[in-house]
Length: 131
Image (cartoon, rainbow, N blue to C red; front, side, top):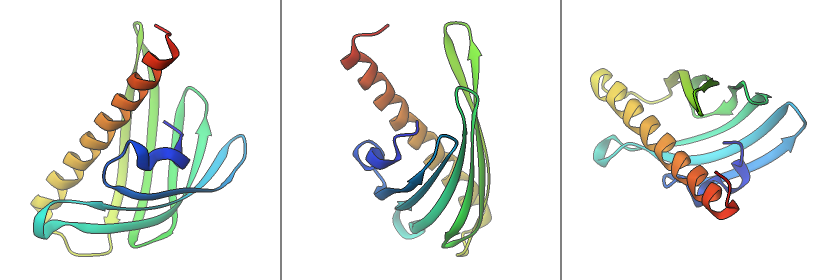
């Protein structure tokens, strides 16, 4: 979930993802990608600060970019033999997107991104031979 330097390999709509700096608790990431479909596609660029609390949560805050606001929290909750991921985002685009379409678009893109992330996690797990 934190392999930002290789994210373009498994997130299809991500054109660039570069780690600018990393400490034990914080990662500064520059990304460029697209969101949407057809006439409702927009290019998103950002520099985001991600605070890591290992095995518990990731808090993301946009430092700069072409959105008015972006803050997200990803929580990892142990559940049975797996982990539930709870994601909450507050984002305000810098371009006008029709309200009903905007919400559907963000939900679709978020689900797709997490599906691709899950596919990559399972692929890496299979390669490692762990259960």
